[in-house]
Length: 226
Image (cartoon, rainbow, N blue to C red; front, top):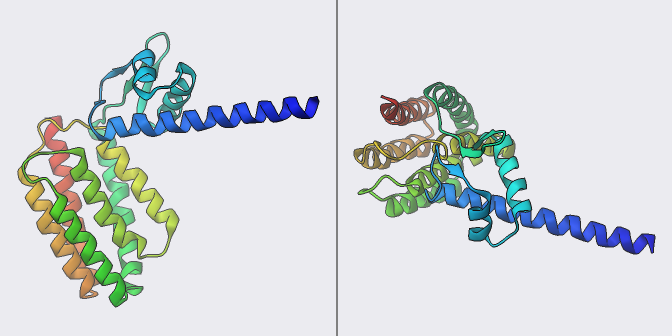
């Protein structure tokens, strides 16, 4: 009997964890799709209905997102989507620059013709899918994929994961309103410059254009703070 109870208890725990993970993914997708925006107060009941689960996994998922810095929790008031501050943005862009500039030398050292072809294809896909007429979260995801593609070439998965986390902490926590549409075209052009420097194995030039790209991205975000 004890064994059976233990098995049932373990199955319940696994089921609860599975529902929590699903709720976590769904809520993050809502943030990505701008269905949930920075500064918005979240209501348990509404989220549970939208996701199709009980309040418990939603509560667990919100707690996890708060621990990761995506939400703010105030006792007796609940959760609110965290809104990026200028100070946080500045710190995150510093970390982003250190990761990219640190990775690019390794990436170029390990460059092969096949990696160049794959990076070129990623750049082309990003360019095709980039929405030039609107500022969307999808555009940020596309930019993330291009940068991740060459950071992965450095061969350090921890570096890649760290970069993804830093990048998401920036774009999932700031509002899209007020961002320049013209920046979409600039991003496409800057990606071409980065690819050109990498394909020519020019570390100095690659660092220069990556630094310029990150600086332009930072200025675009800072323009919203006023």
